[in-house]
Amino acid sequence: MSYIIDRRLNGKNKSMVNRQRFLRRYKSHIKKAVTDAVNKRSITDMERGEKISIPTRDTNEPTFHHGQGGARQRVLPGNKEFHAGDKILRPKGEGQGGGAGEGNASNQGEGIDDFSFYISKEEFLDYVFEDLALPNMVKKTLTEHDAMEYRRAGYTATGTPNNLAVVKSMRSAQARRIALSASSRRKLRAAKKELGEELEKDEDLRNPIKIKELEERIQKLEEKIQRIPFIDTFDIHYRNLVKEPTPSTKAVMFCVMDVSGSMTQQIKDIAKRFYILLYLFLERNYERTEVVFIRHHTSAKEVNEEEFFYSRETGGTIVSSALELMADIIEARYNPAEWNIYGAQASDGDNWDDDSPQCAEILSQRIMPLLQYFAYIEITPHAHQALWRAYEELAPQLGERFAMEQITGAEEIFPVFRDLFSQKDIKEAV
Image (tube, one colour):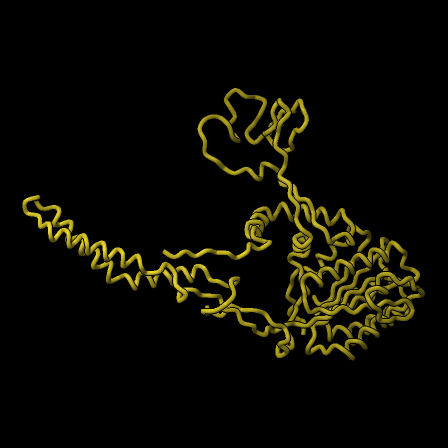
């Protein structure tokens, strides 16, 4: 008898399948908790997990049992105080430790708390950015196959223990044993049948010599079957993984932020939080997305991430300078035939009156023909400014590839972000 011992080390995430199943089951509870958490915490504090509580009533499993107990909907005749569907408050416990669950507390002060658990920062961000996507991402430059990934390609006779195909190997071993022992098993069944027929005869009619021969033959056949190895090296199979190039999409996001003197520190903080959320979203969901940061007051310049978020430079406001720089960068570095190009502009809307029409012209003539999607966010608690009105006249011509929203406070950042980047397919896009 041969034995096979699986000595593969258990992975760190060996219970991941069960956890994923659990998260799918209580997805609605988790999404509600994540939404509440996002509205309460700072955007810069997004990269940590969250404690999720599920009411006890939602974790109860239906059971069959005898006697009294369980949730009951019946109202007895003569009861004038309650109606069907009413919920009766649970008794208050006298001691400490009263739970928040329904109907499980007793007069001894005991109860069952809501089921609580933590989700990791990766799981938290998965739920935050669920159902969000860059609009109308098109697979361009499919001929550039510099991204590789492993794919299954059948089985091989050699490989590493991690790729051992246990089920395939055991099936192969069982098939081999059945094939090699088929003839012996047929002879064994025939011998046992013949022995049984001989033993059913009267004792006077039995042939002792024949019985002994049959018993010896049966023993030899059983030993022959047992000698077939349980598993052979011929049976071992390994999963075959091959590297294949995969087509990839390239995308670039232009982040244009107004840092003029009219932008108060509070408005700048809201704009930065929006861009941090956008940056997390791109980093989380896309592997091959570049980000171009542009700051502007009376003049615009391309900056790095550090300067974009922390520079204190300020001045007057000429928004067209940023749009012209964005158009120049696209023409110089990002061929629209190869790149999916997106833009997000944040401003308080305050601009020179003569400059706003020029912004609309640059946007419609030079930028939008090259872009997949452009989002303008005006951050002001007051009435709309000149730039909003200029974009508003332009919006019907640009269709769904252009979106504009107003943010009046930090609590509106996440809802506006979800509204701008909810999954949608824009047919008009090039």
